[in-house]
Length: 190
Image 1: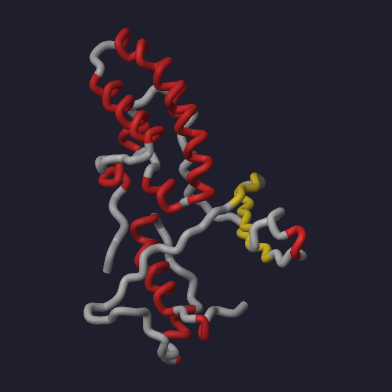
Image 2: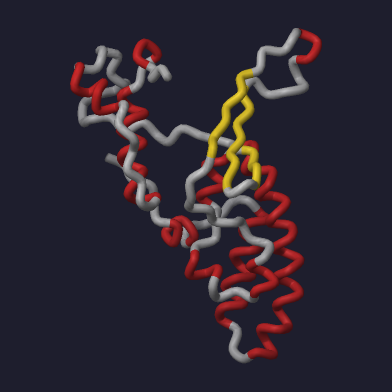
């Protein structure tokens, strides 16, 4: 089974996007700077680069949420940065909330006004717009496409149980296994 790389492992990979590459390069210079005077001199530059990165991240979340997650700043890097720059980084959320999905079928002349599916989450009274992606399919050795055979009775019963998620690493295999078992004929119904 393919597991996503750790956030630190993703951070250490080369970055093609210029806004994110510039920020990564600045964080390395800031972390290697010795003395408070040298770090203070780099802070203004870091604020400027972090603002550019934040704008690029907002666009990337909508166009490619998977890549946006891959480019998130890991905790070990985040904590080494000045508080002023940390305030411009993505907010890490690990909580429960209400998730809403609205399907839209607009008339022909209003087709460009709304996307076909709008998702939102309400977490502690704050509403967020949600952008999703489906992770890579993981197939057993020798299988070239997802199985279209109907799941067994036991598998259907197992699929209805809630997914135990204590952290992202623990949750990903369960979510991925559940996604693999779904085909158009057996999508879960409320």
